[in-house]
Length: 167
Image 1 (cartoon, rainbow, N blue to C red):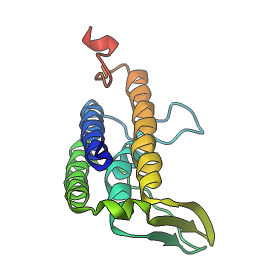
Image 2 (image 1 turned 60 degrees about the horizontal axis):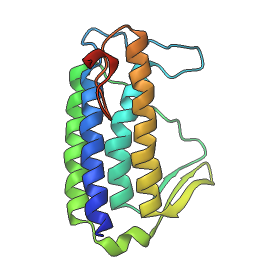
Image 3 (image 1 turned 90 degrees about the vertical axis):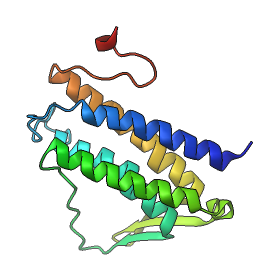
Image 4 (image 1 turned 90 degrees about the horizontal axis):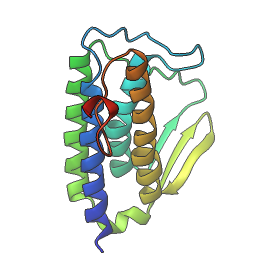
């Protein structure tokens, strides 16, 4: 089995499903909506979903380390509109797919590290990072986004079969 070919196919499938979920966000949505005080806002979550599929994938494939100094202030991407979100998502996915297409299989065994404030939070092979922190993390947060959309009483698309709205 060509696992790189399979991984690319899985990335293609999951990002297509993710785009469908992002498209399900109502055009007039309040991006500050939170289902609970401890939850991310809908805008923060939608931006995180987009950047996980794009920015994290690109970083994993093109760098060996992402490091933030102790005084770094994380400023998450919160879209100004659904259109801006989809445009950013599409651009990043296109770039990630281009990087995947030229990625040398031997590089999957190389280390990738995420360090924040002097502490290593991720220190794994590029393959493990892509599996866990791009694909699995994307699927997890995409599901959360589906719950947010459902709580807004809007229809959600199916991902691994039809949703209740499609039956």
